[in-house]
Picture 1 (cartoon, each protein chain N blue to C red):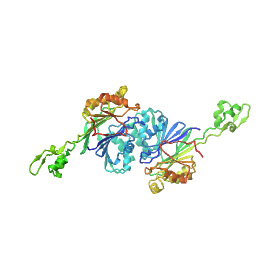
Picture 2: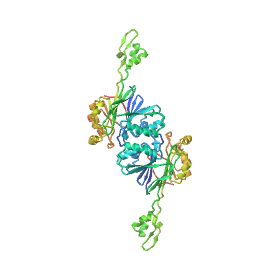
Picture 3: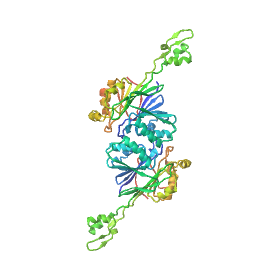
Picture 4: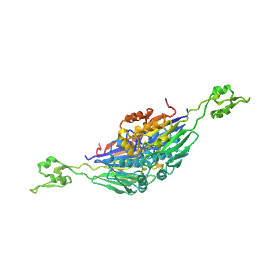
Length: 308
Length: 308
C-alpha cells in the first residue's frame, strides 16, 4: 500500500476553544505533506503530531475566514527559521495572496524557500498535479467565496508476482512495463499475458474536503462517489435555522450529502463551540449515513483502510 | 491590597515548541487586563488561564517580530465574535499598525469594539495613564526597533482606621480626604493629625518588561529600582556569543541587569528552544541575582507579594 494518511489538526469552528482548534488537516501522500486550511496554532499541532515542516510543500486554503488561514504567518515564519528549502506553494484566493504576501514580505522577508501563491477561484479546476495525485477545486456555498478540494490518487501500478516472473524468466528491466500492464514477449516469441505475471493494483483513493458550506446539491454532485468525504458539521438538528442563516451545515445534512453522493466514508468536523460533547452530532449524521467518523484533533486516518 | 497580578502566557522564543509558547503576558490591574506582546496562540492561553476577553482593553507590542505579535489577528477576531465592546487600543510601532490594521480591516471588518492603534517609537515616553497606573516605553537594544514597558502604579490611598475615626467622630463624608492624607478638624477646632486616623498606604508597585534585548547599560538605567523585572534570558553562558550576535541576553546577563539596577525580583523568559530544562538558566541568573524566578506558561504572580 502506498501511504495516504489524513491527519486532523483542527476540528473546531471560528471560536477556538480548549477542546478544538480552528480548521487544519494534513494529507500525507507517500511522505509528501499537503496542508488543507491553516488555522491559528497549525504549526504547534504539526509538532504535536510529529509532522515534519521540511516535507510540507503545498498549503490549500479553502476561503478567507480567519479560522482557516491565521496560522499561515507563524507556520511559514517557523519554516523559514528551520531552514526549509525548495518551494512552498500556497493555493489561495487572490485577496489572501495579497494580504499574507504583504505580511510575510514584512515579517518573514528572509526565507530560504521560495514562497509561491497559486491563485484559485470558485471554478472547478485542477490546481495541482504530480505523479501520485491530482488536486482540484469545486465551489461550496458559503457567505463568501469558498471552495472544496478533491484529492484524487492516480491509477497505481500493478503488483509484480516475483515467483511467476522468475519461472517465466522475465528480465529485471521489464518489471516497470509489467507494472504498467504490458504483456511479456519471451525471446522465443511466446506471449505471457500480464495477468499471469502481476496482480491487481491497489485502488486509487479519493478524498474530498468540504468546509465551510451549507447543504448543497452542487456539493453532492462534486463529491459523487469519493472514498472519503470530510464535510463540515457545525451544528446539530436543533440549530438548523442557524446553519441555514450562517451558510453552514448540520451533522445530519453532512450525513445526507454523504449518502446522496454515494461516498464510502464520512468524517465530521468544524464543530460549533456550543457542543461540549459531539456525540449528538455523530448520532444525527449516522442516522443518515452510518459509516461516519467523528473527527478529532490528533487523529490520523489511513485512507487506504476502508473496512467494509 | 489592590489586585496586581502578572499572568505568563508565553515564555518561549521565536521557534515555538510543545514546551513554550511565543511571548505573551497579561497584567491584571484591579480587574483591567493589559496584554504585553501577543504571540501566536495568545487567545487560547487566555482561555486556559480563564482571563476574560471582555476585560482586555490594551495590548502593548514591544517590537515587530512575529513571535511577539502574530497572535493579534486571531485574538482580535475572537474578541469581535464574542461581542466585545468599548475600545481596544494596540500600542505598537507604525509599521505594525499598518500591517495589522490592513489585515484586520479585511478579515475582521465588523467589530463591535473600536480598534485604535497608538503609535509608539523608541523614545522614552508615557504612552498610557489612568487612575491606577502609568505605562511608559524605554528603548531596548535589539536587531530592530524594540521597547521595554514600565508599568508603575500610582501612589495609593492611606487606609482609614475605622476604630480611631469612630472615637473621634469623623463624619463619613470626610473619609476620602482622610485617605488622601488630610488632617481632620473637629467642629470645636481641634486638629486631629491624619496619622492618628489612618495607616500607611500600600506601596505602589512597579514592573518592567524587557524583551528582546542584549545586555545594555541603558536598560539598567531605565529599570533602576523597579520592584519586578521581567528580562529575557534566551541563552545560557555557553551561548554568550550567540546572544551577542543575535542581540539577545543570557540568563546571567539578565541577573546582572537585575542586580545592577537594584530591582527586587527578576522573572526569566524567552527561552531558546534548545533548552529542554531551563534550570541551568535559573542557576546562572541566580548566581548574579538570587531573587530570580523561572517564568513558565500558566503562572500567575501576585506582584504585591514581595516576600523578603
